[in-house]
Length: 331
Image (cartoon, rainbow, N blue to C red; front, side, top):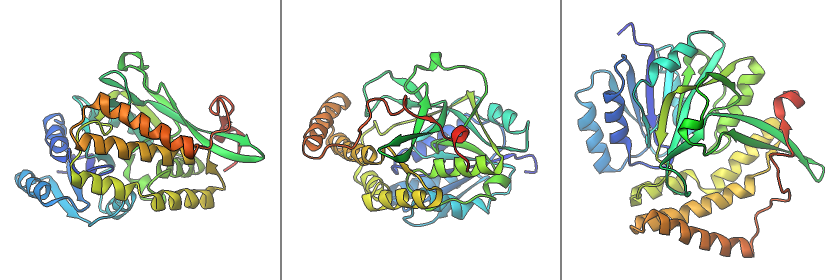
């Protein structure tokens, strides 16, 4: 398969379920040749059996057992095994759409310094009230702001929650990416560090790429859709979610980022609160409570929690008070 340009790597990020649909959809909607590596981060036995059966007839696919580790560690272990010029990391609860690959490659192949090409990432309705599909990631940037004499970073997602029809259709530069689905130049991926983080890892990588002079682009004509935790989760799903979003690991990731770059994130406490809200929501969905009612219950529990332990958020408009990090600070 000398003409194969891309290896697709599928890994859990928040859950186990969804991987079978993800793989079947990938084969259905990808006419171009590709290699597939499915990373087994301790899938439950039932899903493991389905994976083995599904991949048995796929000559271009392999299942790689890695045990219960965080996603970035799985990426780090697999990256040196990639032999194709490009690698597409795809979360197992994300799905590609028709015509997804060619537009990404068309951008990536124009310049050897393009490290990453983002597809337009849409999210299904789930933990927030909104349209059936809306924007999760088109472009985003790293910004910086000062609070009480200290500097904090903040991430701004452009067109956040916009409807698909309202997203620009032209290819544009971006500063970051997210790992729901992203195309990497393999050679560049193998040059950079993949820090042991469960959060902020995409921002750490983005800063590394900028420092090295590499580029990130967003290609809105390639679309990936992820579930955004809206479907009902099984107990095994929650096992992985609670492992990956463990507060000790998230706190350690924040401290490692701060150690590496000298900045902490304005929204760190808000992120811990977000995890609390997700836990409540997922328990509700596990109990078969409808999404709308699950959201209401989550808001009630969140309100009770913040009454006794408010989230640190001293600014009325932190994004509006911030400026672009790369334009205003040296790295």
